[in-house]
Length: 124
Image (cartoon, helix red, strand yellow):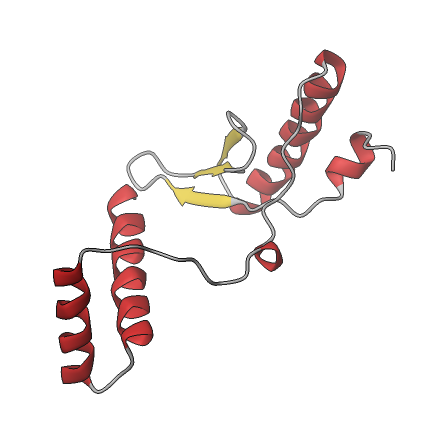
């Protein structure tokens, strides 16, 4: 398959929209495309400008032979990973999950999810 401008323009990249409460307007970016962002007075205008910025970003990469990252697809992940932890931590997690009446997997998922949400919240 020829990965040309149209190929990349048709991919579904994640878009982050951040409201600028101090100055007004919005900042939009595609985290998978480093340095690509735009600012606008409205979200609608921001998406239009972001489309123009993506096109220019892709054109520059293609012209200079710079690899273009493709969107991260959650289907490429199994949802499983192996983690070695100290025995004392394993014991503590097992005890706490038992106190909560859930499996250790569920308890660890709960802890990881809370940590990720907190970290994401702190970045804002």
